Every structure is written in C-alpha cells, then in structure tokens.
Length: 171
Image (cartoon, rainbow, N blue to C red; front, top):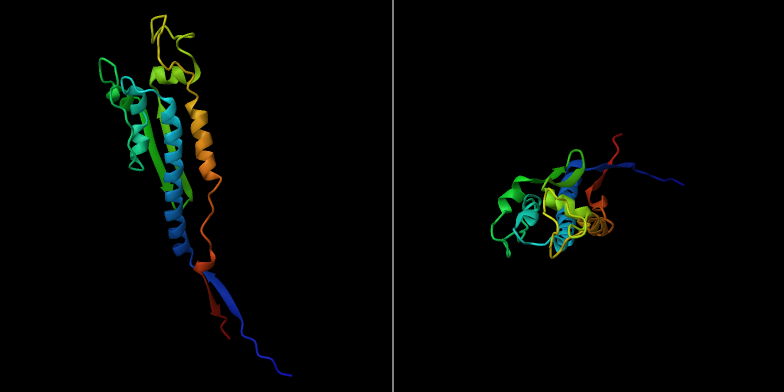
C-alpha cells in the first residue's frame, strides 16, 4: 500500500482581521454609547439646558444629538454645562481598546445624582426650600451602566475563519 500526503499549514491574515475587528468594535461601542445616552437622558430634566448639555461632547463622538435647549428657565445655561463636562471616545485597534468617557463637574448635576435636593438641598446651590420638579436622586450613572452592559453582553467577536488561509509546506 502506498499513501501520499501533503502537509499544509495555516496562516492568519492578522491585519485583515484587525481591520474587521476594529470596524465591528467601533459599531458596538457606538451602539453601547447610544443605549447609555438613552438611559441617562431619561433621568436628566431639561430646564436651563446646563445638565443635559454636559452630555453633548460624548454624544458628538457618535454623531448623536442631545436636546439641551432651555425649557422654562429664564436663561440659557447650555454653555455652562458644556464648560463643565468632557466626553470622548477611544478606539485603538493596535491595543484593542474601545472606550468612551463622560465626566462632569456641574455642581447641581453632581448633587442631584445622589440627593433629593427638595428634602436635602445644598445651600450653596439652592436656597432652602428648593422646589425642583425632578429633584433626584437621579442615579443616572447606575442606569447608564446597566444599559451599556445589556448591549455589551450581546457582543460577539467576528469569526476568524474567513481570515485563515492554508499553504502547502515546503519540501
């Protein structure tokens, strides 16, 4: 009996897979950020525009819009919200890092995240008694994290198989 075998070895096109993974992760990050924004903005009232404006920079990273127009306030404070916030997205395909960052130092938004300003007012922000229509605590960070996690839990990486080729072994 005579048998002939040929040996082949696999080779992964790492760059092509990295490009596909980068595209996929950018899309997933945008979906996750949109879910996060939807969840947090429901909790943030729109009165002078300041609190909601703190989300504009991070929303801009995915071309999403945030309604931060003045709604009943005697003055527009959206510029104050923008000045007291930051938002960015990081997508580094070489390191495999895909994140977004939101931060604010807007005093009343920070206070309302954890406190009911009507029953527990910060006297440096409101003269007691405060009469906010939606006094908090907002808890938007936790609600946003849960919304983000729901999307993240469904993420599956692209298949590697289309990027694997086999080559004959040299004699």
